[in-house]
Length: 319
Image (tube, rainbow, N blue to C red):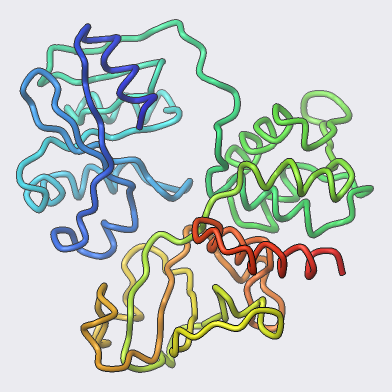
């Protein structure tokens, strides 16, 4: 958010503050999970900045839900935040007068006097933290032999992201010196550096995959569930939360939990049986025996700063 505020403050020559905002009680669940939201004011216009959480995000879905997002969010103006745009996507946004911006590159904010502005500032090659797609590529390479060469097309098929998305992730991992690239242009191949160096350097950039946590009074039977959170550390760390902890990757409309009794608040149930985590990438990609992979599980618990977790993680990962 600081970079976005810095960019807009520079463009408009005034201090613009951007802060993250939760819309749990205002937006439908599928929209809550489709974007990360932040808010700020530009020239007296209250904006809701919407950054897609899915790399396979569709511009047309933003168009379809634009008025709904505005109405549910108290008439704040939705502004789409993107990393890049294809020419036909930009044309579609302009034709439909949908505000958007690509930080340090391009913005279209007609309500605030910016019809189409482009800057020559080159965006940073790699972020401070992995995007969901980059984290998936990182994990794929971690769990595979570092002597094996891979291509973007191969990984695209394996983790079900577009070849373009995987190529962007590969560029970020290369910029962080986590992989070694051989060949040129369409014949490019790559492999990761030595496993423990790769892990040590990568842990500085991994983020929690958890988008949202909800509580249920019964275990869903129509969704494939995987044990998560502390479960991969079972036997090494004792926890006393008193309920099952599960996670599931739910795409878009979450039809499979519709009709179940669930809440965002633990205290809404006398004794909730399930703590359900919604992840921003598919846990099935790296799970073993219906248990989350250890690196993703560790990432989901990093912010708890529990030394027991750190110790158990190191013990498991070195086995």
